[in-house]
Image 1 (cartoon, rainbow, N blue to C red):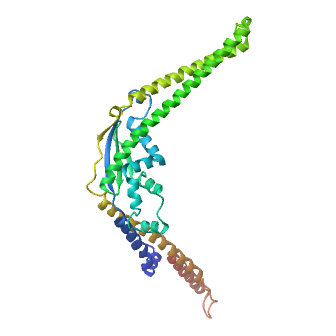
Image 2: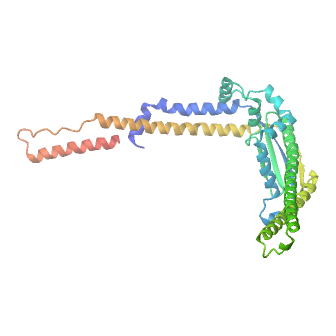
Image 3: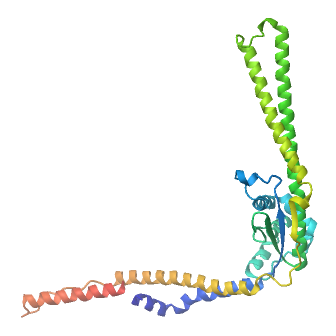
Length: 340
């Protein structure tokens, strides 16, 4: 190690060790004082109404359910429904504190957030995890403040997800019906236009020599194709919705949620805090040591004057005078190098 760093550390030992001690205390305090969490888990079996969908590049059923659940959790309506169904909103209203750690104390000074905000935090991605365990099995876990609330919230989440999932498919079916009705109306209008034109102009029934009639016939063919496409899509979606009306065939709970018997990873979390705190403190101390050493080197460079070469003494030869000047210059250069 550079002597300057050793000397700087010796002079500012207490200052440089302070970040390590503070970081360790804060991380351990945050870990120990945090409100314990209890994790409940469930596994659901998902199957697709169309078994050939994956052959055309569609994601596996479990991945599709994971994506839909993640999107629903971003909506306030879904979170509110889950919290009300499980009683999570009542618990959060009566227990706004997150423990007695540093962040909890800061939160108390700022004041408790709204109930919607606390529900969003309770159902955040860190608390709700959905992980595919294959093509059909989706594991869902929830970490709650009590064992009973963790299990009840997870049951409510799965039940509300099944409900919203069916409602979304029904809404999609309504949209497809509207498209079919619109295409059918367009086709009817096109045919009525052709019939009216032919009644008024019976002598212009040849579309090859009548551009106006040809345009109307082209619009009829376009409307007919649009109606055929939307009708086919509606039939496919109707079959999918009818096939998925029974949850036992498309989304079946394999492992029901149960109340956990122990809190979530307290020893492991404490160990991580004991390691992360000193590590962060060491990084801060190293940066402080480098900054102090750099400041000290700059100060020495500015304070130390260059050696003054005196005139030759009486009786001193020119060669001896040059040798003395050279030795002074080398000594000054060595001091500068050592301080750097």
